[in-house]
Length: 508
Ligand code: ADP
Ligand code: MG
Ligand code: MG
Figure 1 (cartoon, rainbow, N blue to C red):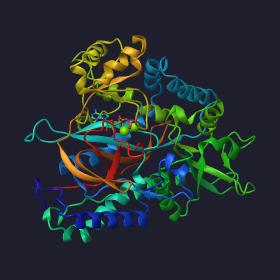
Figure 2 (figure 1 turned 180 degrees about the horizontal axis):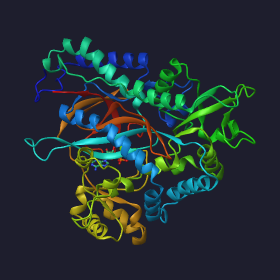
Figure 3 (figure 1 turned 180 degrees about the vertical axis):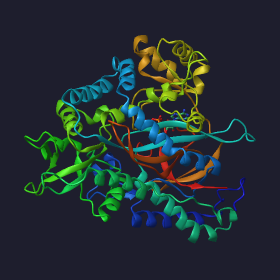
Figure 4 (figure 1 turned 30 degrees about the vertical axis):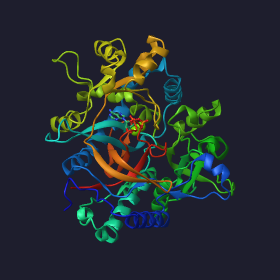
């Protein structure tokens, strides 16, 4: 067992360090723990060469009780978000609060409204979720607790690479760490991580639930993707796992949706048909559309892109996610769940979705303070905090966006608010910063090492398939984890955005 104060081990000379770096680079390429380089690099590079994903040299310590708690409540979180995604009235109310100042959210809602008018044909909806947490600890002697950063309902990424990162650290713990002179990593307790198998199992459950094509076509799964995409290998791992179980899968750039898919003509069931570009004679019926795109305005440069989203949404394919499931992931939803009622006698909003006391308490414990930025009582309080040069230092302000790089931190909050009319502030939420205990690690990024203080963010994956009409849950599972680590000077944690890196958990 490693001791708390010396971990991770000090690498006592360049030999030890260089050796680890070489072994990690080889293992990463050999096992697809890889990314395409940034677009600027690709342009200069012919042919295009992939590179190892940014990764820590050692797994980071994470309190076992926190890790197990986060995993154990995932199926409850799945149920909660399935229930929210079914509550059109609740979501519609929140959309109304932000949509006036947020065209993207308004456009998404419009897609739902258009489909609702003609009636949805597919009763099932699939969620591949990820609930993100940081460890909160007031003082070194206080019991560490997990606090939720956010809940992702669309394009929850890194499940492919995170299982590989756990494998890498396990491999190193069997081969390289025992040879280090500093013994602190000689014997590590590393939890299993089934994120690839778990997420693929979620997709598989939807594929099977769809059943056979009534038109006599073979059925398939479509991975709807951005193009270009740096994080292809992450997606490929899920694809290969699914393909190994015999499911036909195609990657389709979102921009080609209208060119390569159509709704079956004259069939009220609105089957979604797909013709591969290299063999348009062959027709597949799409059982599941797994979106790794479409979560931000950048993916909708034209009216056609919105028509493409509409075509998916109105089709009979099982959408992962539907528009409503995507909207359930708004930061505004998380805020409304976490904000206590103004009057102590009234129930928290989450009560209407989670009636079981234990389940309710388990989720409630993971919330930190989140405020609306509207004109309500709580909103007025938040506006004071956000515009105060001292108070703002404890907060992050978030718009209704995904994918990293959209938030305002600390002193940037009042600075930003000065630039926009007060009437638009309600499109944000204000969240207390979670401050995890200090840790150290070494990050290998683009072949270079960065050593120092780090902050870790745990993500727990969940898969859920439910009937949007009667609420019946067809499949509900926890599906492995992600540990992302960033330098403690960085506000954002996105790996793809270049701030964070892949990591895995060890228990000390
Ligand atoms: P996105 O949907 O863009 O990923 P997040 O809410 O996850 O938005 O915020 C991005 C990053 O900002 C997180 O990965 C985390 O590093 C940091 N962050 C967000 N909220 C908090 C918080 N309450 N406390 C500390 N860091 C936070
Ligand atoms: Mg995030
Ligand atoms: Mg997110």
